[in-house]
Image 1 (cartoon, rainbow, N blue to C red):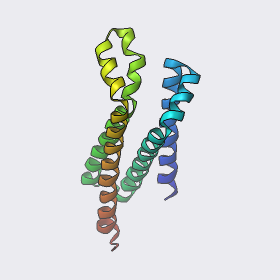
Image 2 (cartoon, rainbow, N blue to C red):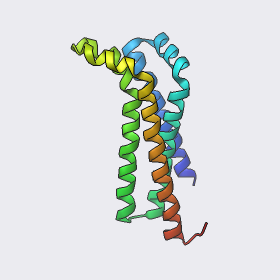
Image 3 (cartoon, rainbow, N blue to C red):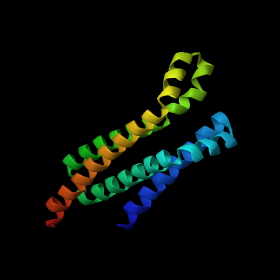
Length: 147
């Protein structure tokens, strides 16, 4: 159980590093800090949910060994998690898009920033529910455990 926890923690840390790194490169450190202070209650759960999904995926992969069904399921959950992270970070395009001349998209993304966070949280919750269920079923099937 140590490896999945370590991998999940690393995934959370990597995602937070990307968040801080990209935002700092685009807008500077003071803006990054102000955005994190304003939206930490969205950013941290999104990052933590991602880390938990990666940890569960690692556990499931170890549990299933080479079972094809579980590998396909983990790939589907990884796609869900990626969609959540894209939704999470999409509002930061508001800082880049004017440079490439897409001001209409900037206005829409900026206007729906909080809704995009909620969409990301919903995708994250769906991914957690899905992979959590698969871990439960996998434990029942592969380890012969009972609830």
